[in-house]
Length: 448
Image 1 (cartoon, one colour):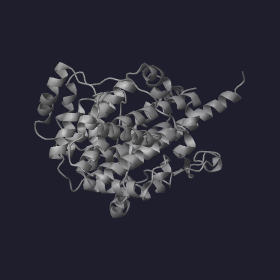
Image 2 (cartoon, helix red, strand yellow; image 1 turned 60 degrees about the vertical axis):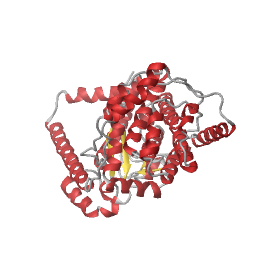
Image 3 (spheres, one colour; image 1 turned 180 degrees about the vertical axis):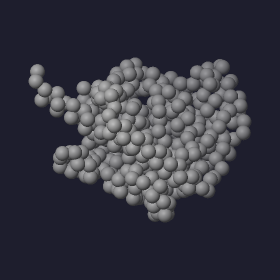
Image 4 (cartoon, one colour; image 1 turned 30 degrees about the horizontal axis):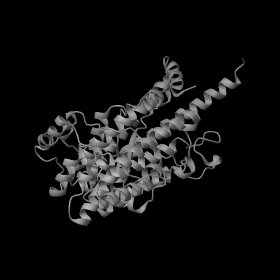
């Protein structure tokens, strides 16, 4: 039985609603409105003050001019005649990239180290935040609930896709960040070496411009566009993933649960906004448990469609603007990132709800349905072994300049606090898994 079967069972049951059922529906709507109201109020407070974050005027036209000639005549590949110093540098960066690309935890740490060394590289912090979420999604597949909903084969396949996306982006992006660091060290641009790492020709003009003007917004959007196009070419459009993963019942069945969330735990907001949190809790009434209301502030966004590259790019831009347009969000994200090491377990940011200890007696929803205990969320090292990326297809994704449409605007989201919505998503996952388990038990007791 799949998630869709469970959903269908619920639908059949609700075709003839009783009075208590309608009462539950009404209560759910009221609670949902309270969640949205709380998120709006808290978002407004955290959005003040606001920093100016804009793309340079005419950046799309500039990029078209820079890229158009090369696109017309065909891109030149990496030189096969690197001098000794350049060859040594390329080999060193490749070795370092592969070492950090061992798993999600090592990648996430490498992004943060790069941002701390060069805070003008906004994308490095964005990548750190998104990579943390990638690790949480990976360990969810071995956590309290998804093993009840998906077969081991389906979960292993989904992990393979998540790991490939995470590793492909790192293999493409980390050498770019390192070349910037090397440029800073030597005082001269080293971006002519980008093709040696298989980086799209799309990126060199943006790096060269950044080297001169230090405009973080244009470079960050360029990196967002580039990395999502890498994923589009090598994962989303790859038949190995398109047919077996993205088109699978398991992947489609997860959409109603809205688990494609990227959340940003805000460390210092827990202290600085205590008065706000209390007023929000009063406004929201009985939304969530005391544990969910007390200490955790989560910013973030929900991605509706992973298979739409334009939506993924818009999503990345929105996350970036949320981080760097709102100083309170940026400060909170950095306070959390610098004090809480990434392990892959959701207990990293929400110890009130999750535990990395696999104790069946203490799992929420076990032992007769109790929900006051912590949910199991393993560390990455306990959930999955390292999986080397291996070789990937060659070739530049840049075949036309339609992607420049993404440089027209950069808008920060109005509503971005997801504390209660994230808790609600986890509750939906819990409910779906327990419902499916109950149906299986009933089926096993039914006479054949």
